[in-house]
Length: 413
Image (tube, rainbow, N blue to C red; front, side, top):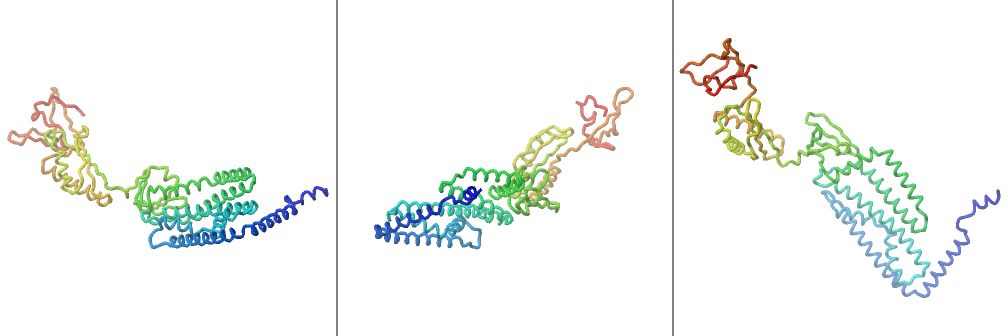
């Protein structure tokens, strides 16, 4: 029992060994100062110059990081990173650079290398953190992104970035000390997996929010459409995006689900295309149908819009269908609505002037007489009447047998 207690309280490194190592370092340093005092003085002067130069560089970074009235640029981002340079790192850089000239003994050189490694690794982690966070701020504060800051997300982003970078820095330092970091790396990996599985929904929406910032499919104030919904983007948050629909209600959708859909950004349109389908009556002369595309182009351009194409599309059940496509010169919805209204009325006005009729669903019934002929559904026209028949209840889509010598029969509907 006594031996076990003594073994448990026995230090890993005996105090005598620590004293011996410290005494060895002091003796080596004393001998070094005695034999290389001139080199040490010169190296000290050079190191002081390096120290002052690095301080001047840090001061320049501090001047760069002062934000102006507009959004911060990349100069501000790197200026903030340089301003975070620590005095310990500056001192160790200066010492490391003059160490070889001063002829430091192995014991002193080993100590300098270890301290420089610690300073460099943690300073690199600080620089990387500032550059990453600065890049996020640069994208969110960009002038063409409407100042979308995602302030609620910056706290957790800073925490995640800091934890990841300093964990890597700690592992690098311990590895340089000769510590076996395999178990530590495995533990961090298992812990990271557990946290990721527990909060995968939150992280998915968080990374989706970052994807919106960097990829910029839309920004606050844009009018977007997705699935059967749409509206104006009011806010992009840590987990969800809020969209105000045209009917007034606020729609809230998670960032991950929103990015999984096809998004139409109507704000980035350069124009809006308008399409009309015009059904002409089936007795329209072929000459008028041949001249119709040029006529429609003249009407569209006369209204100040951009003509795209027009032509025959298909045979309708009671019409010959023509398609007309043209673009509004402005992507604004109000301008598009006005162009559609103006061109539509101009087409009707021109068709009335040219005598072109638009078809609508019609049906003509024929009644059979006892002797096998047909009883006309309208009164026979007088000899001096115009060659146009009028029905009593429905408009005829088919000319009468008397006025159409090619008519051979009808169908009973």
